[in-house]
Amino acid sequence: MTAPVLRDMSISLGAFMRHLPLALRHLPHRLQADGAVVEQADGRRLVIRAEPAPPRRLSATLALPRCLVTLAFDGWDAPDRDAFVREFDRVFQRGGG
Image 1 (cartoon, rainbow, N blue to C red):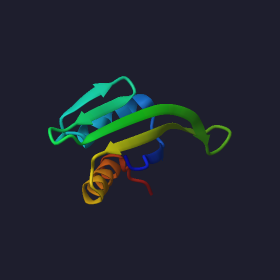
Image 2: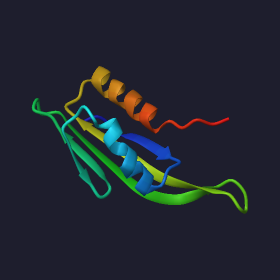
Image 3: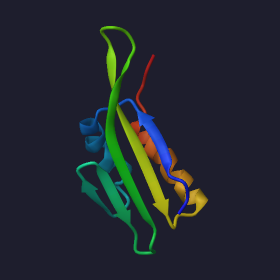
């Protein structure tokens, strides 16, 4: 198993769980209360876990929700893992300006 991919995301756990199926739409998966498990026929496995974190305070009146997300890959080669992480990041990317 390779080192897990960690993300400190500006999103609530509820919003994360609503968007997670979009990142997994092409993979066989089981959603759980705090993430998902992907198990492929070829033995590759991915466990995604999210946990709420204290909000990120930008000022006394503005705070952003946060989740700490772990993507634990087992049996994935580097190109496939990197491609999944790119798509995962794209699904959760938000516009700003």
